[in-house]
Image (cartoon, rainbow, N blue to C red; front, side, top):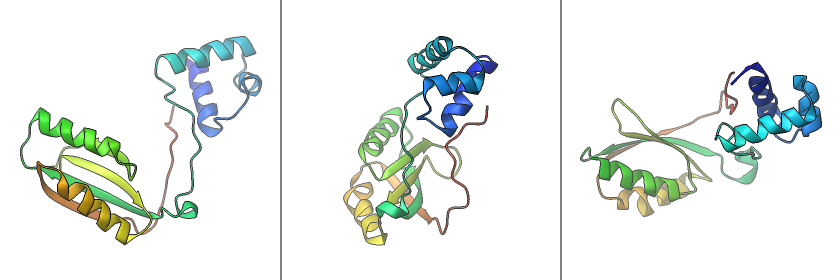
Amino acid sequence: MDNIDKKILNALQVDGRITNQNLAEKVGISSAACWRRTKAMEKNGTIKKYMAIVNAKTVGHGLCIFVNISLTRHSKENAEEFAKAAHLRPEVQECYAVTGDADFMLRVMVPDIDAYDKFLEDFLFTLEGISQVRSNFALREIKFDTSIPL
């Protein structure tokens, strides 16, 4: 990845809907070269996808919870089972295998406390292999950014 690729990525992270022509002008290369570079980064997985970032509060999903999950037994199978299950739940916005006091950390977005209670009862508490669930509720969002500094 060279400086031109980084400029392309920085511009796309600010505006994913920028036209190829405007992107090429912004980074200082031809439109054809810009298109080839962008397509190559899409193909190799550097650019994962394009999307709109939605304001969770305006669509009724303003409750953000960080959930730490500890497994009863550390095994590849238990970890894979949990990861597959978490991947299928739309409330789970992010899921990480972590070190420290927990095995996984989730960022969960729901409309309200009742929805989170239902998420716990219908999903997390039904999974085998979980020994502990610790929830931390976000009081307010201080910073939210999806751009990777390049």
